[in-house]
Image 1 (cartoon, rainbow, N blue to C red):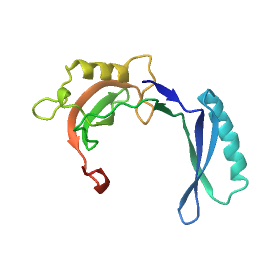
Image 2 (cartoon, rainbow, N blue to C red):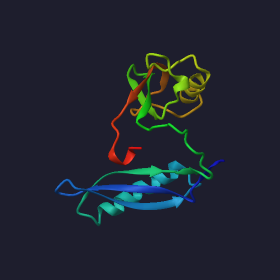
Image 3 (cartoon, rainbow, N blue to C red):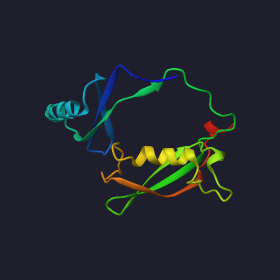
Length: 162
């Protein structure tokens, strides 16, 4: 089992028309292309597209995708609606959060809190806030420490019912 990259990354240009409807155009680039090179090319491409569209260009998204080549089977009773919510402090005194679907019961305490002394949680937090890694809040601020972590449940859609 290994995460393997797709042969190409994707650049999506986002448009908005006079009625506020959204549209997009996808372009692909070789997976090994550095993000800084793609950003420079995307800026030039956006300018060229602006010249030929009556829509407003709202921005673009660059994505690199990796997929598991031999995906493991999920735990028998795992549910994406059963989430672990993690709230991190940031260097600009704000917070940033993420949720993990199908949180394991083994990392939960009796009241629904996530056990921050559990070795798996300690490793996860280290992977998120380690000094040399690139993760940050949506506003670009460094993540400094885990402030809170607990279990939450979201609604089940018809398609998710067992």
